[in-house]
Image (cartoon, rainbow, N blue to C red):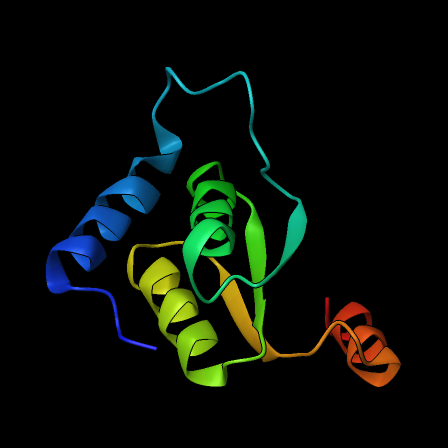
Length: 102
């Protein structure tokens, strides 16, 4: 898969850095850990970024390790907390690994 364009990365950084804005007090995930599968691209990526934006630590799980690492790096570069994992949710061993690492 292609890597996000640099303007998309800049938008990610801006979103995650905005996670401490006072007007966003209704839905916060401070002190919480989220695990998003398929987080290396598309809706999963957006969900992972949104969770981090709201203060949560996020596990970015995807079958494509390169994409998972890129998304986790974008989140951490913007000040969020993220861990990339390569996982296939159709494999029980991968599910066990994901839950044991979070």
